[in-house]
Length: 148
Image (cartoon, rainbow, N blue to C red; front, side):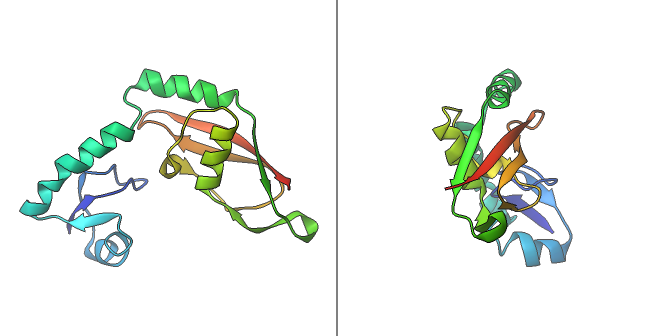
């Protein structure tokens, strides 16, 4: 099945990329969740608008991405949340929460879709989160989750 990605999907590609996947994966996962649209000649014209929007959001060069990674490395990010007994959170920390905390700590403005959380953050403590700044550059952030 031929699809056009509308959002970044790890391991598949960036928005605007034309990919070929198995029918079931495309029909049952990518299309219903809005990660991709079916490829047609008419839909191919939408690729230009998707790529323009992506270039406006994206960190353009590898050098700029490395500069932002350096800023993130020296940053101390603290996130205050409500907790229950035993240091467990009510819910989990989301990528949007982390993006706000980075901005509040005078860090760079990050797109929440670029933040990759390995395991859900549901406890108080220090957690490591990766940020995909560019296709060639990844950065790691230490996020301290504390009781509010």
